[in-house]
Length: 393
Image 1 (cartoon, rainbow, N blue to C red):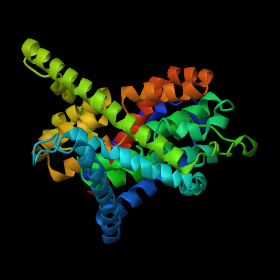
Image 2 (cartoon, rainbow, N blue to C red):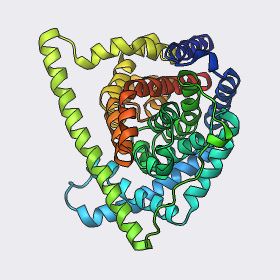
Image 3 (cartoon, helix red, strand yellow):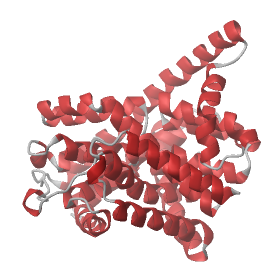
Image 4 (cartoon, helix red, strand yellow):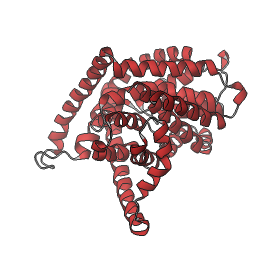
């Protein structure tokens, strides 16, 4: 039965992307089908094999060690703020972002990350039928973040037509950055974080290939990557430390505002209608949860988590999920977890448009115009990834 529901789900997701396509005649179906097969194979490899188990365990162990190192710095600066045995969210989940940001900066400085991004992008371009720049950008988004990635393609922004710009922005919204992966792993199982990271790369190309199909000519494929002005090592360290701290503070502020607002709205709806706002959203999103493979008995509750992610962000949704995880079947928990690992929410529209506008004002205005279509496509990517995982769980 799960295979039938998954096939129906795939048809619905691809159909919704097809309806929104701006050039249905130019859709390349062969790369789309190939990437779906790759997604299924990678999901099965990561979740159902010993090799996948050890790979994810190794990945999780590395981040666990990094969080331990980060904890040393946090204890030195903030030790004594929390009572013994307590784990404040800001200290335990958000502040480690600072240390991981530093490591990303070091790998950038040593030219290790640019090398990885360039060649992984090159390999991806052979599979997805798109330009090398789009492929590089997708890998870079997962490495450095949805706003920072545009700095690496600053030289190309002014030369890109709207259709290619859409694909770059869609990749940025469909993935998550390595700097906050450790934070996710404190709330949901690492195996689902890693799996989502990998298959979202392909999912972004699948949906973009349908919604926004085009062909890049060889002479139009601008692949020169921006080299930042060379800083000293310690200048770079200072910059990435501050950047990581800014991310932690911004995420913390957004959580504070969104969680408080959601509590207030839920309370108002409970008083007026006798049902919370999240429950209403749960009913609206329950059909999508069902086609993702969630049993109907759990679909409303799962739909509420999905909707929370869309209207607030993935952190708020993950916090909600941890509170009610015992009410879900393990398979359902896996499906929802994969859905949550992306930046597909309303606030990301502003973040991405703002990042592009800061580098090229005219292109930033273009991005703002197709913001809702970006969110539509990125949400379909999350649903697609969840459906793919439902096939192997």
